Length: 199
Image (cartoon, rainbow, N blue to C red):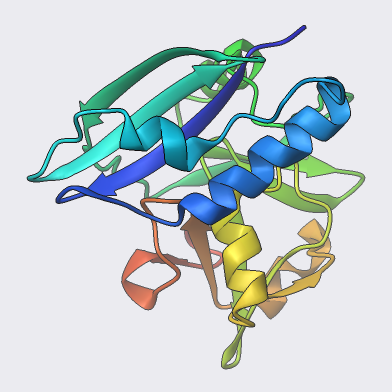
């Protein structure tokens, strides 16, 4: 069985959006471990000594039990240039701890700060985030992402982004792209200009 990962943002002692991480854990157990009791992320954090100052990337590795955790001071990665790569038959439906394929693809493209996976001409995700594309006053996210991230799910629930197919051939119809994850909010400050950011 694969090993799974949750990456939780801890900010000044507060664990952010745990309910959405729990939903993803529920999905993993429903698919891989239907006969096992589902891990409770709220209870697990309640048992930990959580850093009270600063921004931390909390890595939780698990299968049917919690196997490893660590608090890593968060350092933002500066991303200005993106390049599009074919997804092929690679699948990342769940948040697997093994990201070796993704890291290999990044290493193949030193000209860019991050990569965007594309399948059958439809854009999916970057290596570290789901994507949102700005058209007029609205934001759209790929209907068939490589991975269903917690921030993406929350923004859809909050009706801040809408799902649609984002075609490579239609990138010219969008003004900005925003990488969204637990550390990268949906905002113009976090957005990159299109098509200038694609190399």
